[in-house]
Every structure is written in C-alpha cells, then in structure tokens.
Amino acid sequence: MDVVTMQHLSKTYGERTAVDDVSLTVRAGEVYGFLGPNGAGKTTTLRMLLGLVRPTDGSATVLGHRPGDPAVTSRIGALIEGPGFYPYLSGRDNLRVLARYRGLADTAVDEALGRVDLTDRGEDAFKVYSLGMKQRLGVAAALLGRPAVLLLDEPTNGLDPAGRGDMRRLVGQLAEEGHTILFSSHALDEVQELCDRVAVLSRGHLLAESTVAALRGASTLFVRAEPADVALAVAMRIAGDDKVAVQGEGVQLDVTADRAPELARALVAAGADVRELAPRERSLEEVFLDLTDDHQTGTISTEEAVR
Amino acid sequence: MTTTITITPVRRPASRSRPGQAVLRSTRAEVMRLRKWPALWVTVAAELALNLLFLYVFSYVSYRSGDGAEGGGIVEGVSKDSLLADMLPDAIPRVATQGMPMFAGALVLIVGALAAGSGYGWGTVKTVALQGPGRLASLAGTFAALTVVLVLLVASLFAVDVAVSLLVATTESQPVVWPSPTELAQAFGGGVLVMLMWTYAGVLVGTLARGPALAVGLGLVWVLAVENLLRGVGALWSPIERVTDLLPGTAAGSLAGALGATPVSEPGGTPGVLTTLGGGQATALLAAWAAVFVVGTGWLVRRRDIT
Image (cartoon, rainbow over all chains, first blue to last red):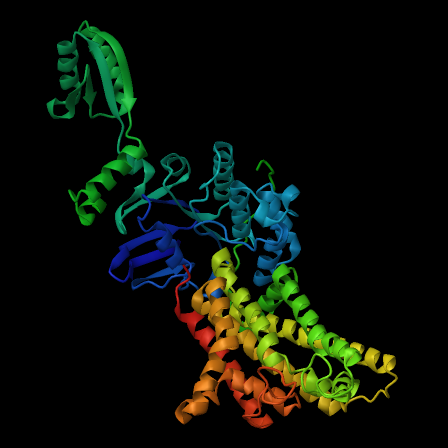
C-alpha cells in the first residue's frame, strides 16, 4: 500500500523554484530517506505533504487523503525544521496543549515524554531546554497519538554524537514497530543505516530514487598482488578484459564479492603473492556526491540521473 | 533516551471529526496556554490597575484635596460633587466603559497582537497546524479563547468598580444606590463589545505582520494617534469626516458616549469618548468591525502558506 504519493509536485516562490516536478511513492512500513544538500527542497516537499505549503503544481496524497485534510493530519506525526513550542510553558504543558488539539488524554503526554527520555525534565520550562532536549521534545510531539506515519525533518540536527545515536535507535525502534517513516537528512551515514529507500534531491530536482543498495551499486573486488603484471593477467582472465581497471598499485575487478576465492586460487596458482584482496562498495556518500556534483555542474540532466 | 516503552502503532481508519469538535478542542488548548501566559496576566493586571487609578484613586485624591469649587482638585473644571457622584455605585454604567475606547482598547489590542503574532516567532503556528485541527478551526479556537478571556476581564473590571464604589459610598457616608440591571447589562455588553473589537483587530494585525513587534507598534499607533489625527483632518475637510465616522475608534468611543461616559469635548471628559454616533449605530458598527477582523484573519490564515 502506498502511504505517500507525489505526482509532478512543484513549488515556486516568485522566480525561484524550490521543488520541481517531483514524483515518488512511500510504501506502508518503510523508512524512506530524503537526501539532499541544504536548499535541495526536502523541507518544502515535507511541508507540502503536511498541507503547510500549497503546491504550485502537481498533487500529493498521504494515507489516501489530500495533504492538510484534518482527518489525515491527526494520523501523522511530524517534526518540521526544528521544534516550535511556547517558551513559557514546561515541556509537559506544551505537549498537553498539543494533546488537547488532538483530543488526547494526558496519558499520551506521559507516554511520549517517556519515549524520548524527558520525563524527569518535563516540568522545566521549554526556554531552558538545551538544543538536544528541544529536538527530543519535538519528536515527542510527533509521537503524540501514536501516528501511523512520521515525517521527520532532520531530526538529529543540533544533537551531540550521543544524542544522534539515541535518535537513530529511536527511529529504528519506531520502524520495527511498523511506523511508516519519511525522514530528511544530510547525514548520509544515518540514511544508509536506517532507510529502506532513498530519494536524492538537489536544487528541487529528484536526481535518483531507489534502495540504498541499488544506489550504491554492486560491490567490486580489489586485489593487490606481486608481480603486478601477473595479477593483471589473472584478473583479466577471471573477469574479462572490459571489467578490469588498474587502480594505483592494485587492480579493480567489476565482479561480485563471491568470486574472491576463485580469484585468490588463480593468483596463487599463477605464482603471485597476494598482498590484499577485498570487496569494495561505494558508500552512499560517494553516490550522493557524484549525483549532486554532476547535477550542480550540469553534466547530467534530471531525467538521466533518475534513469 | 534509553527508556523502552513499547508503543504499537494504531491503524485507525481515517475518520472525519466534526468541525465543531475541532473548534472545541482548539478552544480548550488555547485557554490552557493563555491561562499560563505571563504576558496576559501582566496585561490584565495593568488593565485593572489603570482602571482603579483613573476611575477612583485620582478622582478620590482630587475630591479629598480640592477646595470645593470647580477646578479645585486635580481634575480641571469638575466640581467635587461631580467627582464624588462618578465614584458611587449608580455611576458604574456610565464610567466603567469610558477608558475602553482608547487606553484599555490599546492594551487588549496588544493582547490580540501578541496572541496571534508570537506564534509565528515561536513556530507554534506550524506546530499547532501539525496537530490536525484544521486552520480555521484552530483560529476559531483562538478567537473563542480570547473571547472567554475578555469577558472575564471586563467582568473583573466591573467587579472592581462595584467593590471600590461601595467602599467610597460607605467611607463618604453616601446612600448606596445601585444601577438598574438593564443599565448594568448594557454597560457590560458594550464594554465586552468594545474590548473584543480591539482584541480581534490585534489578532488581525498580528497575523498580517506574522510577528508581535510590528503588530503591536502598528496597532498602538492606529489606536492612539492615527484615528485622532484623521478626526482632526476630518473637522477641516468633510469627505474625510465621512470616513472617520466609520472608523473602529469612532464606533467604540460613540458607544461609550452613548452609555453615559463624558466625551472628550467636555470638561473632565475622557480621551476616546465621542458622541458622533448613536448607541444603536455604534453597536452595529462595532459588530461589523469585529466581524471584518475575524473574517479578514480567517481569509489570511486560510490562503497563506505556513512557513
């Protein structure tokens, strides 16, 4: 079941296009990552999904309803561009006010505060909270009412390394419990760790949408052996001439990692000393930088990138 | 964030809650946050203190220190008998509303501007929208909560007037003559209408400015200066006078004048109190302005993006 759908979604502010013709779907139960540099259009897209901002063109649905429909907004938990709370109220009272808007009892507040480990600091005024505590209260607000869908806009922003780890664990737990989660980030490691599928945006364009594994591509093998000419000859015999490239002191083979034992045996049989034999995978960071660099320098079109 | 409370996502069917229910929830939430808002209590305290000072304390000091002739006290041109009469219980209907068209009105305009404008600075406009009440329902909740606050404020002002006038009558050995319930109800209703109109104006300006500072500044300049300047111009040029007769301050001042407050043009008159319109016309014009401010705010909230 598609929980979120976007068809040709666009948003312009005057002359500036913030989001340009973005189409994608998020399925029930998946953790979907929105990846992009600052100004890529991630937040604007999330705002459109929540009905905060109206699209200039295109359409979207969340849980089968148009964005902003009260019937569906109450089933979404969201943290958009940092938490916004009444500074003079305590963390608990802030959540109680929001719970009243949702028609929830105060038990939901206690549950949400416990979830982000703010129970002990719930009576403190929001204005004295640290940045990390404010962010956690924002997540607690998103969890009010046990929403089916969570839209989290850079939830680890401003958190220290420990806080980021805690937040990742929380998102992981929520995913295990069956929430559909759409979250934006420019922290590639957390997207790689948490997301089933990823959309890469740059300057409002959708550059790529796929699983993390597919985006990173198949793994390759790297071998360094002596003598080098023997290693190169063996590699070409195993993988084929067109799937071998010399890289520094070694050789890169465009074959899957499960062929490593075969390569090792062939090298030893040919009398080579194997110094290094390891599978190589492109990190999501490399993929991301390739895509965004190419897009920003105009070397690939959006259509090409997505294809 | 190590607490592990298991929350099972609830897959509720999308149910459309009745708009009335959303307004009720929003009103409860707004009342809760307004009740704990220090700025509101400061304004209420200032309102009560100014009412006490200008209606009773200064008049009583003048009455006690005067020589018995006109102009003998600190209120120029007003006799001691007249000063005392205005401090007795039967004067409540005519004096209670005299400060509302301008000074008390300016204070409640600040309340409205802060209530609406601060939410943009704090980011709570966005947070509230994400709870799903619907934009107009949450705005209706704001207006309803402010209406409750204003009715209670006017009731408190009247309660202070009753208590202090009784004290003056007892201290000065004057017979206690209460105004008729009809007069009291008319004055109370008129006071509520004047104060609500200015509060709603504040909400509109706060929403328009998307922040409290500019809204408060613009609102105060309008109430305290611009309308009076326009009236000055209107006295010289009749086309402008036809416009000034329709201004919100004219309606508020005329209603106070119709309820018996001394107009600014007479000795001891209160700034803002006018006799330009009759009571019925002033009431209708005030109601119309209040409606314009509510509808105007609703139109803005409905059509603008929440960024």
